[in-house]
Length: 299
Image (cartoon, rainbow, N blue to C red; front, top):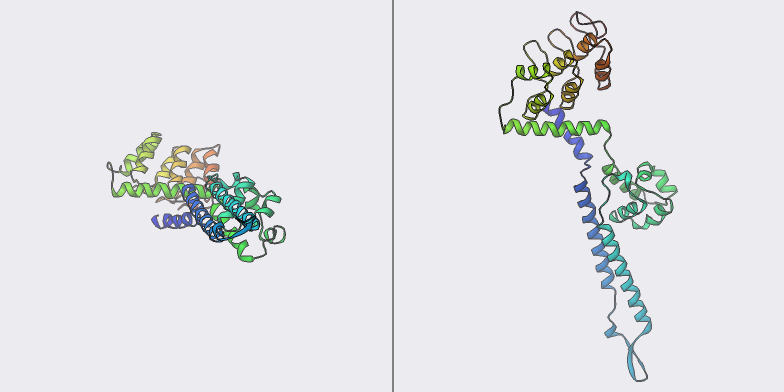
């Protein structure tokens, strides 16, 4: 349902792994931090023209001041080099980050004081994802609890989606595409019987196109059959997978109370499709109107 996909969108927004957005956020914070640091350093450098001393009747800059100025210039150069380094793209997958990448990331969080500890501990991206708060506090010396919290919160936003979350993300994206097509269809959305006929004939590409055009995966015929049930009746695992990825209700029951699992177990003695459906979340305890579970048959 749309409410379901809305909730998925909320999940997606909380764990946005869009690489472009991440890179822009990192670059923006890096530029701001570096520019501010450079300005602060520049503001503290005294001008040589105002500090002179006499040697043999000739006014010369005080050597201590010269050395101080050189030191400050070196600091500014280091800041500029760090700024260039921060603009280097981060790998999209945090688990592929190097120790250097982790150090650059700490710079963007204004936590550069911990770079040395993280580097000495060889904390790369994969290791970073496994660090516990107590590790950061007791081993890496992050004494401020809010600093630890900042690392954890920001790290979680970069954590790759697991297989189930990737599937849900894909479903959300496909539902959004279907919604746009329903609002502005490029061609008519196929009728239920047309799609069911395509499924019975194994026309995978046609079924996929119907879904892209906005066909609702959970639409039913006069007998309460859904597209998934029709695919299960025809033992078409590939189309079953397509429909499930587009939001089909795996436990939908038709007017007789049978589910896709009932037909999979009845028509596939080897149980291959039934095993697949169970792996995707099918409830094998549901009974039809005759009180039969998928293991008992359909009539």
